[in-house]
Image (cartoon, rainbow, N blue to C red; front, side):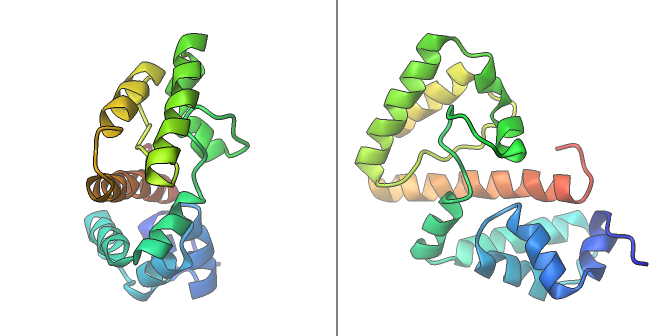
Length: 166
């Protein structure tokens, strides 16, 4: 029996099983396939670099697909992963929650997709401040910011997949 934990486990998993595990990190099959195709990885830094490169290579349509794997900031979610990442919103007051909901609507109206931010370790008030600032971006700038945030989220989720505490 193969040890399924850590980087060695990811390297050893059969392709379909590895892809399935990676889809919990980023919901884009093309991204997961690229990570699997690059195995074996000698260390986490090599894996993270491959994940970043695969994300950078995604066409815009696939980037939109990645957003499907993320709930709105501040929205109730059934995903334990997203709930953990957005834990700082749970303690936010009603005013912050309402402002986040309104900000999410304004963001989606302006940019045509959900507000994506690496929420891990941030309070509801911090996430609201970031949202308010990003509403000032032009669409091209915002798409680049969103890719950067998605890369951060992917790295945190990959570290968790490997058994890290990120």
